[in-house]
Length: 311
Length: 311
Image (cartoon, rainbow over all chains, first blue to last red; front, side):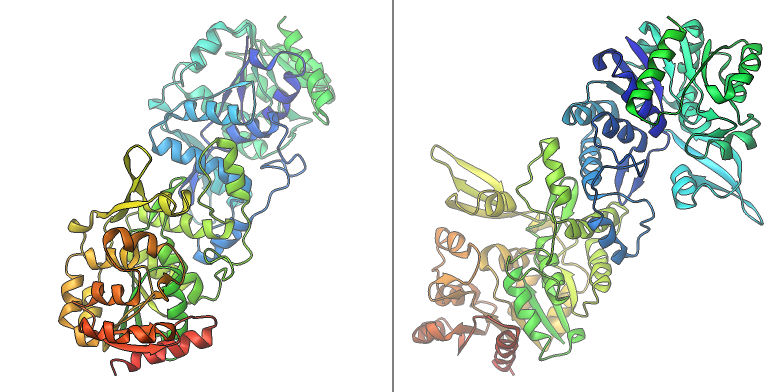
């Protein structure tokens, strides 16, 4: 059994490659839920959905989020009611949010609803939310005249990750319990993969759930990460806008330093080959390969290399 | 000022005619909410929406419910999650239910949310839910081997009004308070019109809200109804399936008897002209005219005749 720590799109693509080299039922994905938010009264879980839709072959690859062939009739109609509609929820996607929200209000934990949703999409990877408890990423940004704290989606989508970041916190993390199965997976897995996801706001919240970081550290030799930073920039998303202000170098070396305590190996891209020695210098075994997942075949090759790193 | 008691489609068409002969801002519509129900966690208020959409000129006239040019992408996608989708909520319509539900959960009373929705649709008629409290119509039906109680929409839409009706009750009615403005409108109105709506499940619940029936009875001379039964059958909907089992004759005379206590005049269709004497015999002034609202012009003429009946 393999355990993985996963954020959104980068993790989803990696997992889609991974299931080409190992049986999906042998993979547990522990997914960030600190990006979750409520829109129009609906509970939206962006990373769980990105992973589910991608593994189901239904995600909009060009767009990088949501479902393929989406329409936006409901969202466009909501504009009439003068509510913010910058978070683009498609009509088909809304069905997932309606179902999830109704089940949560009926008292089902997020982990149980996630299992129902993945079953409905015939996804055999076992998706676990990092916790069934509410954890929310809050981004403190610098305004011209003051600082202000924003919800993650407000900063990332609503303001296109533009406002400079001063601080990040994960509200509720200290009281959160790992979802059922999370610690068991980390304890029993042959290999633990930290997917190529944002180290600060995707992997960071999972590590902030009490017990997870220690569970990883105890298995450090079996933990392998994939750097989401290639050539000094994130492959996708705003990782650089978050890492730099928090004092993390925007490079595979910065990722290695941030993960060194609990991660024995790190896969870095071929363009960063010359930095492998620096990764090794912080006590992390460096594996150099092509990490740009331009196709499912490349993602599968990356997954195979990643597993081989701790084989 | 005119007060009206309104159900769904029949009332909506009548009101669309009425606002051609009196200023919309002078009209208060007190609308049945006992058909309201929850689908996929959303609060759906069929009669309020039928009236709003029709007055906004946006209703699907051919279909008799919902919005024109609708799509059903979300509902079709919900089928994946194995939830019942027989209640056909369109994508644009869903925006109304999302907005209303979020506002209700935020603590706004239904009357306040209704005002927000009608304003968004530029509807100048003042729509009042009969109550801000939950009242729900329950239909007891005869099964081959037993009786069973169904929610209104389950019976009407889910089972196409087919199961024979044994009894009807309005759960919660005895504890409901008229919404703000309802009793004031009934007290101050120059004329009170009972729209051509189902006497049992559209007008019945409004009358069941404590205070409403007495307020009408006190103004009996100013109250005029429009019979929804023409030639011994309802113009639309399942009124006959509800009236007969409850001992109400399915005719304009049956309507007159049911309303006689609080309604001084009743508009009946020309095809029922020979029954005018029977209506008069129960103490209700009969007005004979064309009540089949085949066009907004005919609806406007009907509205004018209706107002003239008590002028």
